[in-house]
Length: 235
Image (cartoon, rainbow, N blue to C red; front, side, top):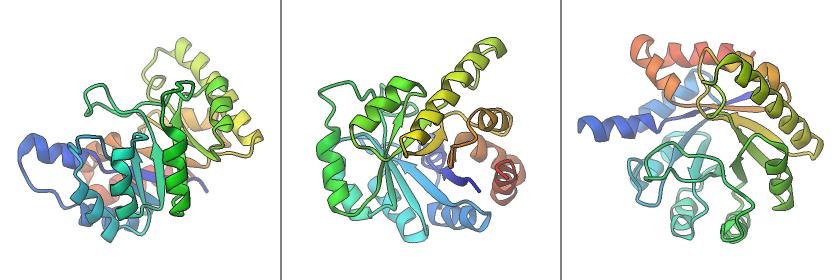
């Protein structure tokens, strides 16, 4: 069965917007009780809206914690202190707060190697968020990455004809990654309506990450029901 990761970044964002408290420990525990395999927090250079203490709080509560971060030397200290079960390296939004995007692994200035080396020496598995295309998969393989998450955020809201073409590219990328013996996940903009179509195009994907749509649905039906409904879509 595919592994489900739920990103809890929306909760610190809500705290910042409303100046209210959020209980990340409770959210992480409830998510795991609802059948989620891992919870994820994404941290940026300025540690807003997710703070270092949020990551440490989630680490204490979660059985499996994923940390999404840019490949920044400045964030390695937090990663080494929190000891997540997995780090997903991703590009930071333009303002540090907009949603993370895929890394461009062709950029020679990207400090991927040193960050991967430090995390690897600490025994922390590393994956990268990359574009859903063949060249990005080849570049990830050249960087000796053994796990990737293909970014779906740019395709889920496209009109049907354009979306079909992008889903075909996604399918090709997943097949190539699997052929190269890379673990493959999907993430970015996925929700209850888009998930099944994307999974049909990428049946070899072993991981799925969902964030905002799950938290939005939780406002209406509660976190447990929202995540159990999501889990049922993966079977």
